[in-house]
Amino acid sequence: MVGATNIWKVGAVVLGAALLVAANSFVPPPAYAQRSLTDSNTHDDSNNNETCMTSRMMRDFLAGQGYTDVTLNSPVGRYWQARAVEGDRVTLIKVDTCSHKIVSRTQMGSV
Image (cartoon, rainbow, N blue to C red; front, side, top):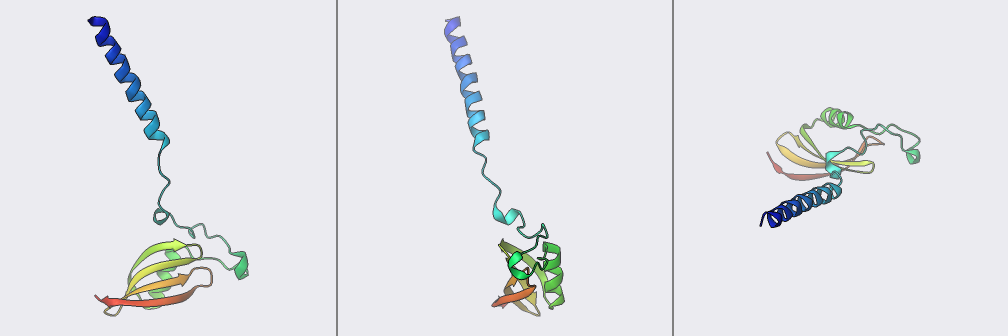
């Protein structure tokens, strides 16, 4: 009976080790929202090598346009979507971070 108990213990240890190895090999990549695609301050060749905005530059740009309470949502390539407040209105803003221009504004309601 002692030998059977040891086999179960060894089996449990082997199974635990296998599960640990399997769990560590399936780590998902970070979500795109957790990293900035433009924070590297790289240049875009299609736009005469203008400097693309970093997240800090994006916030400062929108503040200079009169927006407050800026929340950056999702960078997609050279475009960045942000939620911001202008007066008493909440606005969804899409900005071309390399040309430093607001591409679209969508009013979402009041504060």
